[in-house]
Length: 152
View (cartoon, rainbow, N blue to C red):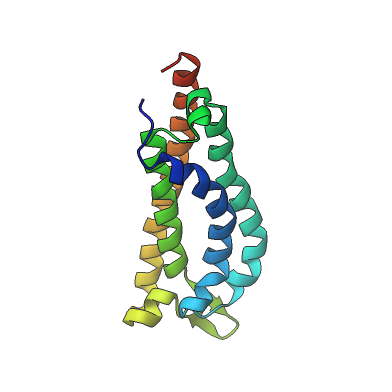
């Protein structure tokens, strides 16, 4: 398992984005044209949980002695981490929201005039990609710990 050429960027960005992405998904999307409703209100609690979950893979990656010494991450871990970020950004742009009067436009609905139902499908796929990528990042971080302890 080789260190990634972009591993140094991921090594630093993973900590910053673990804090910023949940805020973007629940609140920051309003700056890009999404109408904010109950998801933004309830998102404060979910955002804290998601932040804690997003910090788990970087903590595990720090245990890898080879990667930590190089201040980098391994290739498969870097790919999985970037997929988490991509899924979270697309989910934030398409997350369905509503208020007491009905459905509200997501950012992609506001930009492209997509119906609410299409936004729900995009959100479901993107959040699914992010969840699978999170599991993969945890697995790849553990594999990196093993490889690092063997000196690989």
